[in-house]
Amino acid sequence: MGFNYPRAAITVDCVVFGFDEGELKVLLIQRGIAPFKGKWALPGGFVRTDETIDQAAGRELLEETGLTNVFLEQLYTFGAVDRDPRERVVSVAYYALVKLCEHPATGASDAAWFPVAKPPTLAFDHAEILKTGLSRLRGKVRYEPIGFELLPEKFTLSQLQHLYESVLQTTLDKRNFRKRILSMELLVSLEGELCSGAHRPAQLFRFDAEKYAALKEAGFNFEL
Amino acid sequence: MGFNYPRAAITVDCVVFGFDEGELKVLLIQRGIAPFKGKWALPGGFVRTDETIDQAAGRELLEETGLTNVFLEQLYTFGAVDRDPRERVVSVAYYALVKLCEHPATGASDAAWFPVAKPPTLAFDHAEILKTGLSRLRGKVRYEPIGFELLPEKFTLSQLQHLYESVLQTTLDKRNFRKRILSMELLVSLEGELCSGAHRPAQLFRFDAEKYAALKEAGFNFEL
DNA sequence: TCAAAAGTGTTCTTGATACACCCATGC
DNA sequence: GCATGGGTGTATCAAGAACACTTTTGA
Image (cartoon, rainbow over all chains, first blue to last red):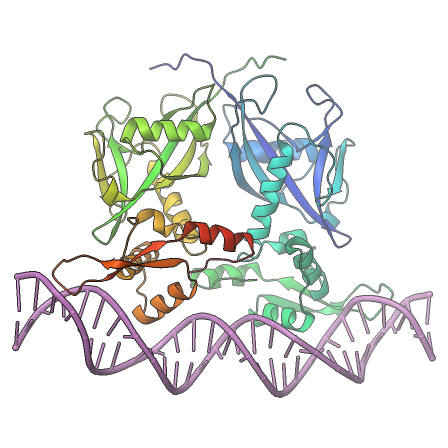
């Protein structure tokens, strides 16, 4: 049986989140070609027939932003009929979490980080995709330890708290936050210190991913 | 710009859950054509270029099972290169929740309900899709009131409890469960009774969807 | 009268919340 | 020495967990 009828094209688009200066950001690419030439858009592109869609997402991310080995997870598939003015295109969206401090360069010169709170006008239905990505991140950060993907390998408890406050758009009590997070015993304290920046140095911690994997296996649930 | 290169076909597949005889079930269709002729598969089919993928999912569900006006939500997109032996096919999976008692007929004669715990061998990668759907249902049932989609309009607290026990694969304390669920004040008690079935009649309840919508708007979160 | 499911409260324990002061450093 | 963020403990309160017997009906 051969399928001879018009087919939609399939793309992947990636919502790439980073955290910097106490603010959640998203990586966008300025389009060099029509449609939406000059407009900002999510990095992405067409899926090839010899690669999985996961592979396509990773490849496009690498090609367009230089990022590799980052947290990358499927988000949602967008299939409105007229979402691309050229013709029918279905897009499988992904979201990525990157340690912005460790990837300061955006790779391509037409890429830039924007605060998620006030992004520029976006091409296609990318504003909707961004919104979906943001709400996924907000939901998931509370019951999976994915926040650490946005911080450097070594971080302070204040950095972690500010990350949560920024993502969840709340303020958290410092003592309660520390008690909660330390009680899970997933952070290992490093005996070095940091941030000689202007004030009292803060203790550095590292997230123990192996321990988390083992605990999760045993039925443990990360929460808040 | 025309996109002239080989394209994947796009399908939708629906994991249809029902609850009957204290057991969670899934609706499957026996394939009449190759490949996997005679094997059981999820209802689904090709997406047309003039319909959204949501519409395609609803249409296929209606055509293959006769179901309409049911809870239907996108699940995940499956894009392994060789998931269809014929050629490259990307499938956008959905899951549906149906009030099995109110749709006892399966519509087509080649459709049947199977316990999710022991489904038959499935065509394509449908076993993986089913597993993904099940884990989504297990996750979501705890923080959204979607369990009611699987029960009749009027139900008893015991039915509700058995539903949760079946989906979550645990046992729940009867008194604590009733206390918890009633404390949310989302159930309205109907002054009729039920189940003249062999024992003491039980109070019937109805889920108040309007009230839930209002509470949710105001920041309320359904939980467990 | 017996079997089967319905219905109902209290105690205890645990985890969440609220809250204020001293410390170390760079300037 | 002062401004800035780092670091710490307790008391109160609310919610979750554990737990057993009586009631109503049909057979």
